[in-house]
Image (cartoon, rainbow, N blue to C red; front, side, top):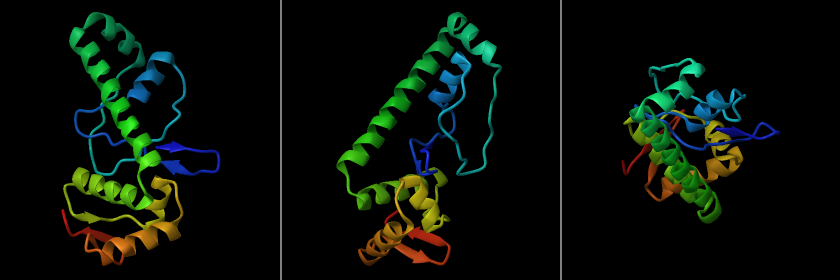
Length: 154
């Protein structure tokens, strides 16, 4: 996620098993502080490498270099998709895609997030999210329960 000065957030991309965060790699290589924040949606394992090895391995191991370059390419594609989503899609379409992405990552049609948490991640207000979720429920896309959203079309 990217945070702004007013503590608003914008979801940039999801990382799944076997992925790496290209922005984190850049911070390691340049020895600088990250401009993003990561939040785990599910339990997982994290592999940490000494930053000194990053540069050494890029020169020494072709497979590592390929992994890093593929990672940059994948994250760039995802960020372009995010920009397109913001620029060309309605908030309702953005919300629907977000919910489907969360369901896919969690491998569950149940989403346990508050309206406020969703609003933060999509950089909008809770009132807007609540209104749009109700409209998606009326259209049969989801079912709203207390502290739970269930995707009907998953």
